[in-house]
Length: 91
Image (tube, rainbow, N blue to C red; front, side):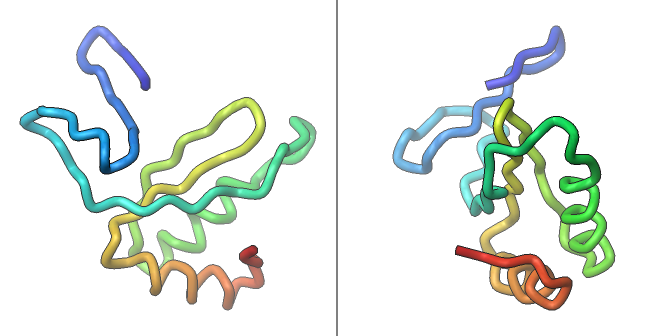
């Protein structure tokens, strides 16, 4: 959940149906393996730049321990292929 004076954003599993005029249910999540040390820099930038070059939009969420990339369901397979080509690994 994030809240600003202009909006409230909730990210939750699809089974928790939220009634909203801006509901967007077709997202998949890639989790960056963590926890990440704060001395590490550029991880999210590298991932997002790689996907941007392939014209894949992301919604990034960062927590204390790691980062999450939310992608539209229809581009998940392509995103994984692009990231693998850039030598990012998946578990």
